[in-house]
Image 1 (cartoon, rainbow, N blue to C red):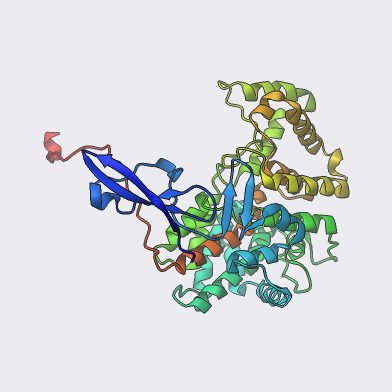
Image 2 (image 1 turned 60 degrees about the horizontal axis):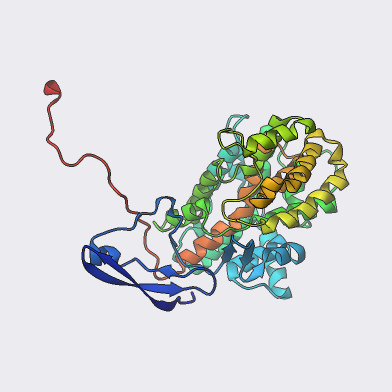
Length: 433
């Protein structure tokens, strides 16, 4: 790991006592005040609910500047990676912090391709779920159960086992996700094929059937690969922080990734593109758009314009422009512009972009807006949207897990609290209360 550079000190005065705290500088982004000695020197903690002003770790993987709309992996812009790379090339970059040469990429692709099958006994686990179980519940259960089947990649202190676990999770997640869908619709499981791309293989396992050859659309395959790239990693978000916190205890990688999937399931995190389609259903018709835009401007109205703006990006979401291109290509390929819901989405985008209220506040369509449209057009049910997010984000989680385990300074996570409960009091027997 690269060492942080000193950027001076910050002076804190508490109860007449002055403490000098180191200020550290990364290679990009804001400096941070190192408060690790604060409790020892002052007897106080910092207070930062949701950790929105706290750097919980140092990392070399992903850099975000939300003010100007920057997202980079290993120094490479997301726009360049989405345009010029494949998802597996981005996976290699996140795992090894460098882009692969041709030979390295071919070896990596072979390794992932040849590990896409899952243990046959895991197939039996699916039948233990109700047919109407949410596919995210299935994902959490199956991924967590992998630790019971792959004992040769659970020793986190062995570098080779760590790498095997990374490869297995990246390779097997499309199979696990596709089978969750197949189980929910009562269709036969489709086994992976080694002569297809990562995205193409997933599409075939999801929508193919044994009775006929699956015809893969290049435009849809490309769009799927782009969606995977654009969701691969996003710095220290809720699910990634969960994976890091779980792994700090020494838990095996499969358990840690299952924890990440569980966190992603929350509608405030991974369910945003599903919320876009639910909002479009609520609007119902193009003629209703002006009314709902006015409602979105009313702070007292609970209606919110989903898929516009972003908590991190205060400017344009850099992933959205890339995905808009794919959305146009997919809709053209499938003739899906005749779908009333998708026509409504395109009209909403047009009107909202021309509205001064949203333009002044930089409430532009984000990645969730376009990914929801694409996935709907391809034919994924809305309950599969978060599953696809989990599939793509697995590489980010496992790369963050690997980076943390390899950091000699890592310790078990232990947030503090500001206690507001009762102070000590006498116990009163039940017959005297």
